[in-house]
Amino acid sequence: MSEYQYYEFKTDAHVIAQTLRIRTGLPTLTLADGVQQQLKLLVSRRLGLVADRVRITARIQDLLTMISPVLEKTLNLRSRGALRLLAQWQTPAGLRRAGEARILAYLRQHGVRAAKALTAKVLTAARTQTVAVAGEATAAGILAQMAIDLEAINDRITAIEETIAVVVAEHELWEIVTSLPGIGTTLAAEFLAHAGTCPVSPR
Image (tube, rainbow, N blue to C red; front, side, top):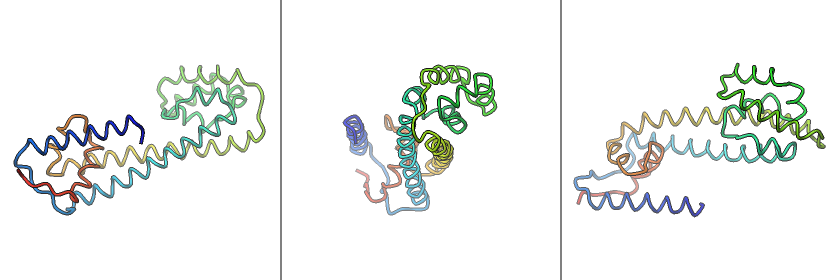
């Protein structure tokens, strides 16, 4: 946990504690009911997917750095466009051979936003590296598959977050928890998923 994350965690905990001290009439939370059990399962699954995303992203960055440091610096792996691009072209030479028109058409076909700007950026980067490195072809094949895997994981995270939003809204304390400053749907779901183990009695 970074210093910033630790500070944010302490801040959230303080806000929750203050709210529980000041507000009266809050119901006592008991062991997991149906909604809470659903949240536990969904939150656990989401955390697992996020861990997979972090791991695969780091591996893609390592492989990109080996093949082309300029592409690694140019591509934002949180962007769907970057992953779509890597699924098709992974090396500077491959991008140069494809050319602007082909890359742009491919990105637009897949609904990538700002496709023209991304095309220009990657081609500019690709033109600065004309030397192929050892093992490039093998690394490129792995990169393509990992980009596809990361896209799929991102889609799964989006889908499970949509499900979490529906389920968490069914919890009796949904409005109270989300009224706390800085607590959105995901953090509220994590809190409510585990709140049953921390009974809170009305003051």
